[in-house]
Amino acid sequence: MLSYGSYVDGQDRPGTQWVYTVRASAMLRDFFGSVRTKRGLEQGTIAPEDAPQDVIGRCAVADQHEMEAALQSAARAAAEWSAAPLATRLRLVEVFHDLVREKHDEIVDLMIAEGHPSALARWEASGILANTAAETREFLASQMEHRVGTAQRELTVRRVADGVVCLNPPQNATVANVLLGVWALAAGNALVVRAPRSAPLGVMHILRELIAPALEAVGAPAAALSVLCSDAPATMRTWLESPLVDDVMYFGGSRQGIDFGARCVAAGKKPVLELAGNDICVVWHDADLDLAAEALTEAFYGSGQICMVPNVAVVHPAVADELLEKLAARAATIRPGYPEEPGTLLSPVLRPDLFKAVLDQALEGGAHLVCGGRRLDVAGARDEVGGLFLEPTVVRVDGLKRARDLEAVRHETFFPLLPVIVPERAETQGLLEAVVEFVNTNEYGLRNSMWTGDQQVIDRFLAGVRGGGLLKVNDSHIGFLPVLPTHGGTGLTGGPGGEANYPMLRTSHLQGVSVARGVRPADAVFTDLTRKASA
Image (cartoon, rainbow, N blue to C red):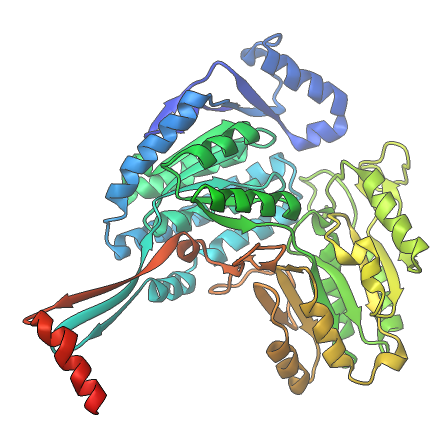
């Protein structure tokens, strides 16, 4: 069994209170028995040495003293680490990337143990590699510093670390998202991470086994990284109140996140928000419908509990019937199961009552059920009482104009539910412009995508769509690529100032520098200006 204390100032600090992690497949086999075991261990009625094999690890719960100690050590480390050369800090990312390759299977196995279906765990690991690939490192290096030499001066525009960055990862994808913090470190910041009490083990293990060794390999101060398992409200309050905190990377729902971002600004902190997505995928009349249907089924991966999956499709009326038929056939092949099983793509959904409410509202509002809508057990059998899984569900919505009256269209639902909007044939005049406007008026803006074979349509789509941190054409909606961002967006996805999120850039700030040789101040102030004025 893995065991981690709080990690502060390069030291492991065992605690008196622990959070235990039970293998997700054991929870599916015997939910109540697994919960009893977990509670028994955490309450001390079961000794750690008596824990069954399905208990895979534990993490100490940090107290207020440890939270404050982490910030103090981070502030000291940030002053030293920010002075390290950019090449050294980028070397950190390279070492980390190589460690991810080396420990790939270990990372995947741990995510599976925490409940990620195996195929999706591998997808997340591929995203970590793409996000830190050589091409990505080269691009970000080009953004961090630009030099121009003149006869008497060396002029530099550079990005400088903000200082202490605190990161609060989401509960649904802790490991993949927390590893974005390596870029905050590469900017020259110190990083303090909260491991959520609901899923702390992967965060603790991966940061200790990947980022801490990478920091050591490049000679960075160990205190540049702190990891604590702690309660969210107390931690957020500490971060907001501490004068040592500069930035907070926050993942969560839009309503709560926008409010938290405002509180950050009021407290003098920079919020880096990663909130909900409500992505739109457009399918045009000349699209490859087999490939488009394949991309749209990504809406059901992880039961739709992934912020960057397509949440809404807009399909040209000329091909809607054919596409819906292909989509329903593919949706029927997506099944639940234990996370270790290779074909599993659905995850448990803890609030199926909310799914039913959203689906009923759509059907009452005029949508038509194409497929799905039922609760399933782990074997894929219908179970409307105790089923923890939801059948991939597609509804058809006719007409663009009133589509956003439906909750399933207007907001991210976090369910395996895909509304397919089919514009009325009477709307086909100027339809592309109407679709672009529909995309632009989405309140969210994480990713948007399109399927078409017409280059002119592609050009008009790319020129017109302003929302979203990432646009993709004729490609997987969720697939990761080097150089391009994995996160970030506009509107309710990124909040005010939201954009494609490169954490190295978001946790640093621009600074101009001039180093002169033999310049007389009076000449710099007056002579140069006179010459410009007379030119």
